[in-house]
Image (cartoon, rainbow, N blue to C red; front, top):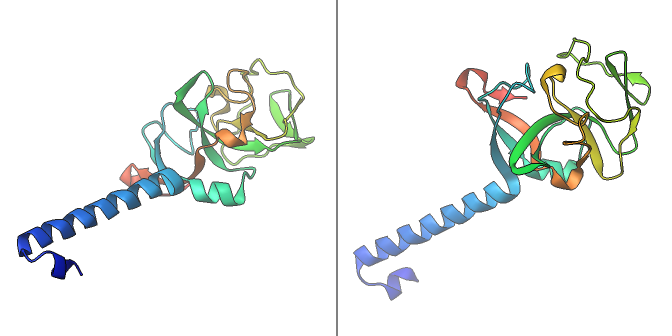
Length: 181
């Protein structure tokens, strides 16, 4: 059909390139806004899992389809500066009771066991414990528990599920650390 309407081969080639470029841009925008998003890790709050300077891909569709699960690493806008995204680990869901006793976190009276966080909590935060996670929210912590501003602090608080940008799916930078998180 394009051949019949445009007789000039140069014009036809330019139109075909323009259509291909427009479709590629449209595909990229759909993928970026609805499927994946790239985020940069700043600070040490998620060490040793994620380090300052790491680049990760956030899965937005999986988050919408499967919803939150304990253990997910998620990104969300910081309440006091929405232009800044925080990346933290979900440790409790709506209705769960989080407690901090003698430097150890408990969720529903079960000690929180991690493979990466062995130190006792020194930074208690300004939240009152025990804390019941409100409906529609998540309780999140950084993996570097003594070096993280997270749900223990009212400036972050319980994170609304609707604010979550996506679940961290894979680390894509640095090259030596590419892979699942």
